Image (cartoon, rainbow, N blue to C red; front, side):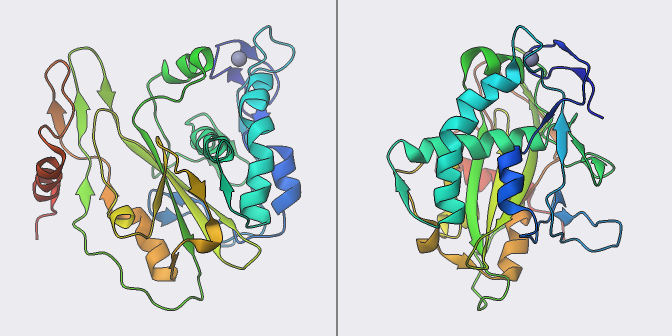
Length: 298
Ligand SMILES: [Zn+2]
């Protein structure tokens, strides 16, 4: 049960809350797995020990409904579902390209879905709270979702990448990268905090999979080596002009598993000066610093 106060407005939610994954999505994909949940980069097993499942688990979150003056669930529907649903079907079911306003509508739907799916208060019908015990939640500042509710904008420093995986595909050459360990930064104005990430994959009708990776990196500038080598496409915060999932490079199974391993959270703590971000300096130099500073000790 996901009872408690609405994560968007604080209104007391007496029922079990709302489905993070909407009912139309279940209708579309139930029985069409495999679906895999991850805690960080580790697949979460079911009761039978397998990490892949045919059915999407139900995920509930305290969000107020039509019995609340704020009706945050209605707001979610009108803001994300109504505009995103047709695009989700076009992209993930019909495998057709989209362009123009359809792209941000699709991308915003994915960001919203992953953000709520990995919320610390979300309850998964199979595995309970996703944060137990290995921590795969997006622990955003408490003010983040209320601010999103009032402005309609996502919190800053959220990045979303998309990759396509063929588990039976030919081996590919993966990019050579040093694992980045993201620090915990804090600033005198209270900004900063813990980084977090979540990954959600969906099967496609062509037997490939699409994987979405959402990372919260407060006050940190990050670059994904899979993006610079073409294996991942950054969808947020700057959605591309067009999106064509069948034209996307396809990773093999090994590459699919490596997608979640180019960075880790839980690095050292860094204090920033007012107005600063991490790492400081121009982008190229900053990245070199990030990698050399965070290279695991041999
Ligand atoms: Zn609410």
